[in-house]
Image (tube, rainbow, N blue to C red; front, side, top):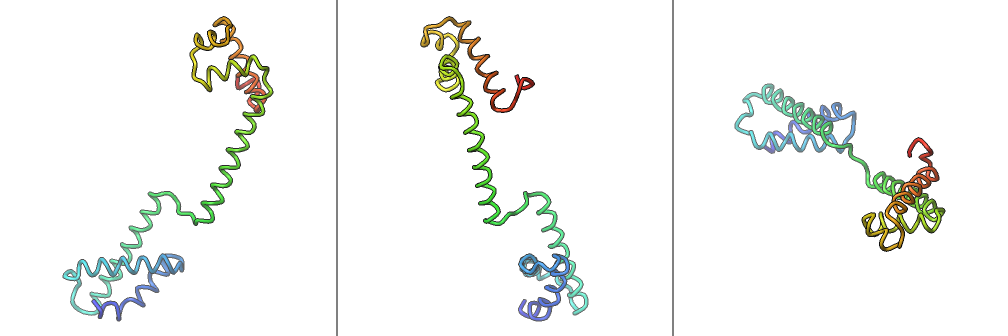
Length: 162
């Protein structure tokens, strides 16, 4: 195996660099995988320098093809910096959306806020909300409907979202 590494690692590296558009870390990973497959299948290595060379380059090409196929199947890799920036942006977007909902909620009348609090925050049924608030069931349904319509309109859904 030392003979193979000494005589073929540089030419294989140049070949793999060309396949990876000169991305050295990717080419090094492919070279390592090529040598690992070679070591595992050492008994299959043909005799004769030219045959061994062809065999090694075929293994390297197949390793590169396998790696390309794996990249197509799994999600794109991102750096830690990109992931952090995406998380910050997502958090910012979520925070702004939550802030819009809270502001719209506080813009509702107290009666509408109380009904939505009972139904959606406390998880009460219409009957339970009516009992807790001391109002008829129909009033709970009506206030919930108009409160949700007002929220959708205020947040930006407009009349078409209702």
